[in-house]
Length: 144
Image (cartoon, rainbow, N blue to C red; front, side, top):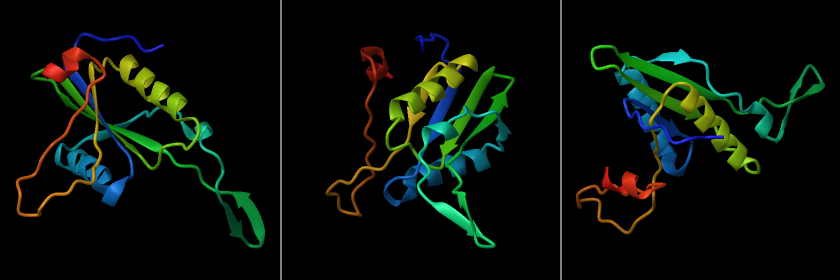
């Protein structure tokens, strides 16, 4: 069960494929620019159905299931950890279980804030300034 964690020195950014791969691109950019190192990600493979088979030498095998990878950058001078979870997909059915595993893993690492990236289709002129939209899971999060 996920509990609210008040220490906000450690953050997690979670990204998955979506519209135009915007979130994935941002996640890989952060991982690269912050010179992050991989650490143990939550086990989520069992939450995905087998949606294809691979054929090799005439033998059918269950297709590879999507994985999530977790990266960390530790800033020891500020005692801040920044993590990026890059998921290859989100499960179509057991998505709540998936979220719980991600949040449980984050909590075990002392993460105080979790952000997700996504793209949203809007009627915007390309010359207009970019806009950022956000939502929070509690009122305190709206203030930040």
